[in-house]
Amino acid sequence: MAKIFQVTARAGMTRVVEPIARGLLRAGVSPNAVTVTGTLGVLVGALGFGARGQLVAGALIVTFFALTDLLDGTMARMGGGSTRFGAFLDSSMDRIADSAVFGAVAYWLATQGDHAGTAAALICLAAGALVSYVKARAEGLGMTANVGVAERTERLLIVGVGGLLTGIGVPLALEIALWLLAAVSIFTVGQRMAHVYRQAQRIGQE
Image (cartoon, rainbow, N blue to C red; front, side, top):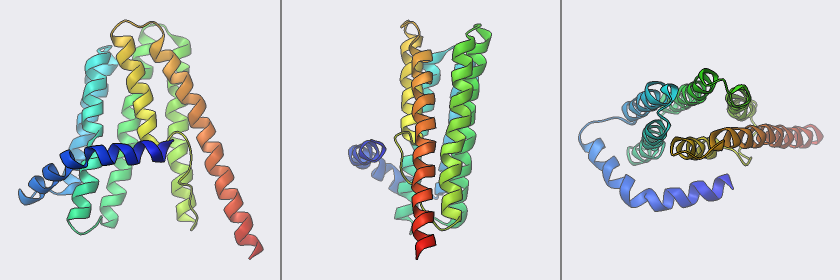
């Protein structure tokens, strides 16, 4: 599901993203600057709006700035490819942004006395970090873990839809979205660990 969604989204956004990327490169803007700006925008949406219960505004701002993932990657390819530091920065900023989003959601739900929703948001925060860590650790060991049903795009999409629906008055939409996300995130961690285990077994038999 993750790969299908990402390929479709990228294909549909290409005509919009590429001209913007070219314009920014011509203006001397670096992909790293776009990465940091996107993260700052997510922080504003999550902490400045979402944590205060302004869920519709928060979700829209976070979604808008999260799309810089497409923009900075396109800029890097047009500029001759991503540098090692650029890849490191992008991954680090993603973790900061994700922590802000789910931390803000957990904080707001806690202020509303929604203990179940708060617990779900905290599980999503921890499981999301594990999804990324398992992949990074596997790649550090010379293996891959690029599998799973809940990669970053899907996680942000699910919580964003839940936030929007709750913001317009749909009861329990955010809580349901968070528990769904918690389940698929934990499942994805299991998928990636099993994938790495199979690779390790094959390597051990060679």
